[in-house]
Image 1 (tube, rainbow, N blue to C red):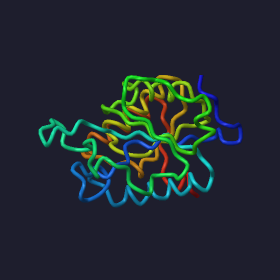
Image 2 (cartoon, one colour):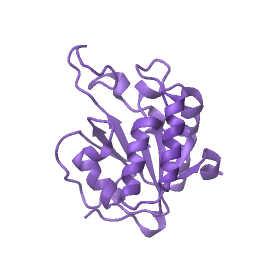
Image 3 (cartoon, rainbow, N blue to C red):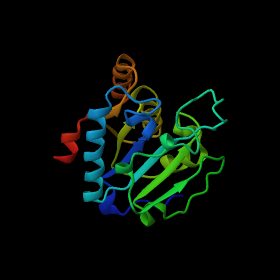
Image 4 (cartoon, rainbow, N blue to C red):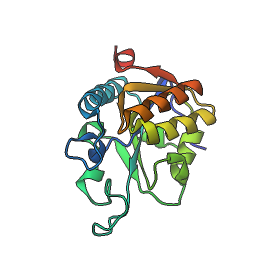
Length: 204
């Protein structure tokens, strides 16, 4: 069992979903359509997390780099685009590769301010280590930011809600590739119990 957060830090847990260069920079191979606004708000949320000492669990997609022959052409292993945007990185962090293991230190969220977990898929709950951490950790509210609304954010939120977690989604800190599908995803997440909020509601 993962050692729970210190009581004074349990109000919020920030879930930072796939905030990588390929998604959030104009030069990225799969840049979201609302990149400029979203990145500004993500910076604000990360600054809030630092100031308020809010722990962060980050996911990052990574796919095999087969010398340009991969079916997926973004977030390829070893490329700059696969790296996280610098403003989303805390100094006191630890990173885990995408593999079939689920081992984690019991005090991980006390020892580090940010835990970065790589994944070989969109749905984080398909990765054993991420599934274990997100299932076992307890917090007053799981606050979600990142990309993309219609896929990785949606599957993360739904997985948390299915596990009885309270979920808040910062809608103006979410990147999307398809605006119509993103709006539909937000409606579905809200219908399942997620609270839709904005950056100003958190950073005030």
